[in-house]
Image (cartoon, rainbow over all chains, first blue to last red):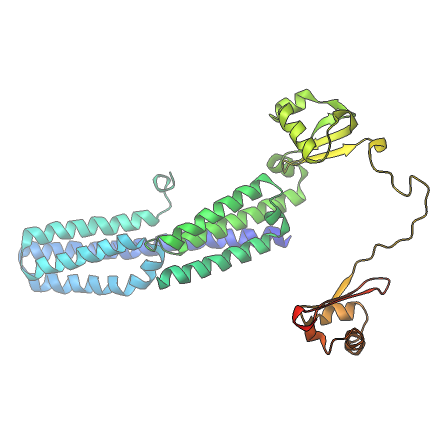
Length: 126
Length: 227
């Protein structure tokens, strides 16, 4: 019986952990995207101080999640997101609205892509 | 570099432990499913070993999943004959009572050349000497000859033969005393040391192999450095 129960338990554990991971990442990404939307509004209004403040908050949260994300997400995707954060910050510091908003949109898409990759979806499986 | 090193060690031990847990069947690849598993696992382990951009978990999870599925299927096969037949198939008799079962050979895509080659590999050159040949689920061919084609046994010749087949128990292995085996054989360490000294060695460390069988016959081989 143990040769039946042990593998079932292991498979159930892997499934549960995978689904939890998908939900955990989705929660974080949606929060960061909401933050990006706020940053975008401030940038449109020309309020760069507020935009940078909210942007840095999002970046700090992202940095805190790095160890965990590096365990579950492909490293090149993580590196690309990090590069987008860095370039967006540079545009914000120089006050280049159009470039900043474009980079922010790219960053937002990339974060959503990271989230989608971890979801249990037919298109991911196939 | 250190990443490659650490991942290789980790994956190696994960594979070793996993295959060990699956048992001798996996190593012997008795069933096609087990052969597939072995092939897949080696490829899965190689990917995170070489590509550091892929999280190690992306390699570990498929490996653990495959091992678990394999164990689960084995457990199901153990409990259900129907599932066993579905997954492992059934042995097929290709020669029955000396007659080639051509339909059975066709259904298994076994050609005459392959059959004869297998028989030849087992020392059979004359098809007429074969009573049964069974193609097992592992792909091996089991050959059973007619009784008068097999070597005669003492029983058939009505001869009494002294039973001289005894399993030896190894008491010293490469200089190390195997205490568990010593206890199993009902012997003491003092006795062992005395026997070792009688054969010209100072201690068990100088002995490469020391075994005793059911009749009390002792085999003692010293290490080359002490001979």
